[in-house]
Amino acid sequence: MSFLFKRNPRTPQELIKNLNESIEKIDLSNDNHRKYQDECSKYLKQIKIILHGDDEIEPQPDQITLLAQEIYQTDCLYYLTKYLSNLDFDSRKDVAILFSTLLRRKISNKSPTVDYLISKNEILILLMKNQEVQEIGLICGSILRDCIKFEIINDFILNNKYFWNYFNYVQNEIFEIATDSFTTLHDLLTIHKKLVSEFLADNYDYFTKNINKLIQSKNYVTKRQSIRLLSEIVLTRSNQFFLNKYFDDTINLKLIMMLLSDKSKNLQIEGFHIFKFFIAKPKKSQKILDILIKNKDNFIEFFEKFDLSSFNDSNSIDEKDYILNEIKKLPDIERL
Image 1 (cartoon, rainbow, N blue to C red):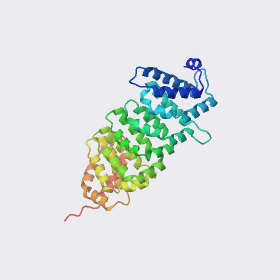
Image 2: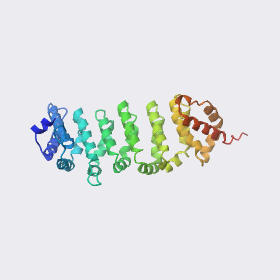
Image 3: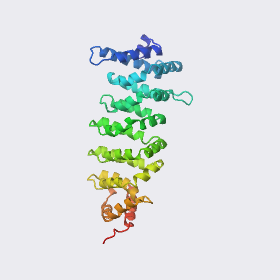
């Protein structure tokens, strides 16, 4: 593509100006839409050469600086995001590369693109909203996951009302959209541990309500991904406040008990990895103890038959034996 760059020499400022103009001219219902799509594709490839070079041209720091400044000043990233569905497939991928490259750009200890996205947070909201759009959902998910590597952006998204849409996105009937959305949801709740700990503490009731709905889904993949995400949250020590409340909640215990009785052995295993914490918790609430004692005999019968040998996981087998012994130590139910 270097020949294209040489035949059409443009300054970074001209490139961005022309790109913005072409983006806004694309109308998919108009016969000329292909012409403007091609122009956008051409400009995006030329921008990529400025940022990364090619076989003949090396990236020039001063040109990259001019390009980035023009992108921020003209809100180019906003227009690219707003009209992303109007671009062709290759151009959408080039937009994702542009975001990723600019996000990695640093000046001293600052990330100017991160600062820009926080100030122009409509872009982040568009990326969240578009996660469920079939044509661009996967690209938006990829861009957003690059963004949330930065804690300040992760914080903005967690505390935005559109974050809760992800609990619907992961149930999208289009498998690829649902899976990609779950990847984004997972990253939002696991990368920045201190931030997530505070979020879970502040939003315990609403988060638990939403994750429990997913665990009760009729969709096997949704159920298994949800319980795995919950397991990862439970295993994160910084989430102590959340853990204390979660394992004192009888609704949660009853839900996990249902997983133990699921016909799927895999879901039984996932349920076990949560259930063991209800048993191992040193100071159990009286309501939790009452349920455990009431079901003591059933638990003993279940775990004596609960075969984990086929999973070749010696740790799980040891944990099962420990949990069984702890259950046997529970008081017997008082019978009149």
